[in-house]
Length: 598
Image 1 (cartoon, one colour):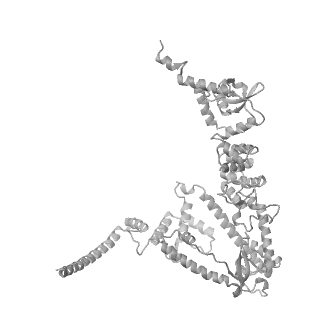
Image 2 (cartoon, one colour):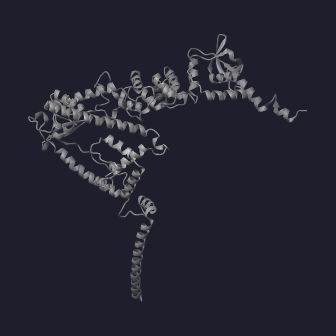
Image 3 (cartoon, rainbow, N blue to C red):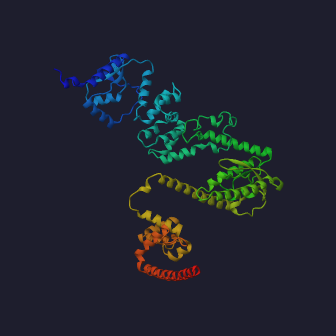
């Protein structure tokens, strides 16, 4: 007699499981696959396997699963003499060894030439936990046989993803390790990989042993150039023939995938960019001489002695040009015709109606009409053709120019202030003064840049989210910030004359140290309360319709409750009396209306 149990199970397996197993065997037979339980000792790893890293914790987890359930999916191997080399499934193999398994289920297949490596690569690339630099190297191998679009199709990835990984493959080993350990983001790695290996090595050595994302970002920024702001035509193939056109160049990030934004052209070959920039400037000088165009550097006399500006002025003089600075000329630029779209963008943060925006547009168009008339009549009014250029970027624009003062080159007297005179026009004593002043200015600029860099670095950290109580240094900084930026000179004298002590003989740094030494928490309380009294709003804003005023009004109740209550009482009495008078007046008017109706 056959029982229900015997019909549903055979050798411990359900009918469904048995049918599934038979179907699997038939399928394997049909495609020539054979599953064999091979000795773990006969299976070896492939030294050419592209995967090099395995997550230890995940490997241990898989090992525990294999101990309980066995290897659920056979690995793929190829025969090599008396051994079998793993093609796919090295992770399962390693976990089986950890689980002390003696055999492992394998599918034995034959491969030719580079087919093995290609299969391994594609299999690895379809995993979710693949390490990015290994992924990049694997895709780079495939790129020798397939175009990027074909690789993308085979892997189910976007074309841009493949291009970025191909670029990441060019990262030198020193930076790859930072990507592997998670210190360096993939996007930053791609940014560094834009540069030649020699340049990457210099960046690595400049950074030092410890990874510094802020410093790397800064170096990338300093060595890349926005081609949309280039002072030359990026489609010009003849500017420097050997370099060709920028829009076709492989060092243009736009030709390497969406690395800096959709279609953004960024040059990553700094030497080439600088060469083109310099050549374009020489061409600009030649055009000025040939066409009798006045060339004006965007330099004011006050900044003429800066080293960079001196080099530009000298280059113009050596080219036989008279040097006119911005102070020497009057300039008329071609006005830009306003559009309603531009007006809407300009006033987007204002609650303007369509009628008000139209009015702004009409005003702008009226100004444009006047400026255009001035521009069109410039030559009739003594203006000549000119070009204004930036002394660093060499970006330039055509304008009309009129000389309004004698050029410094034509000056025969040197009664001008020392700051406005060239070094060569000064006596030795005056030159020493100028050198010292220039050094002071350089230090100021350097200090400003250093501080800006530190602040930008801090902004990239989680400093704001720090939960520690404010330190004395933080409270000192906040107090001095309140004092310096919010307290007027008269109020400093009136309310806080003794706050910093006698500072007449102190440097700025000594003032800060002295303030910190004498600092008390009451100081910051005093400053904050003073600022609160200055930041409340008067006029139509009051203690029932303005957030600052409401909060301040509530806060001072804890200090002057009785006095405030007395003031409020006076106003309530006045309000009540006024309302009584209004009530009487309204009553009389209503009575008059009643009489008229009767």
